[in-house]
Length: 155
Image (cartoon, rainbow, N blue to C red; front, side):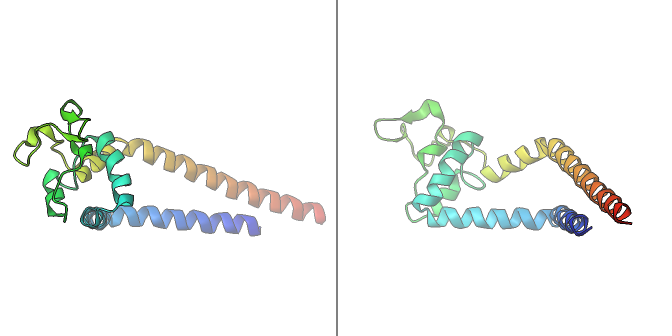
């Protein structure tokens, strides 16, 4: 019975986190925005190790766009923002890159691309969540059934 109780507590906690994520969706998005902006301002090696693959994979640049990178101390757009056909591998930068050559960089910000990715996969995420929910409920049911079977066996 203790096992069933533990499973039920975990289930209730997961349910509460899911409801909170839905209820505070805008706050969550703002927190992600602030966190990404902060990492652009820092522009440390660790931050760039996260930004470079993200920008290449999602074909995006900065939080809201390439101009985000001009607010840093370095004030340059990283090569990971550069469209593949404009990369000059000999210098590790965009060919003839300047702020006004915006067509050489990915135009969309990464927050928008991340939002699109989550929205595109929302049905899958919800389906997986519901599936896990039913598995946990089934586990709680089996734990209660097993506890009652053991109790009957002892009597």
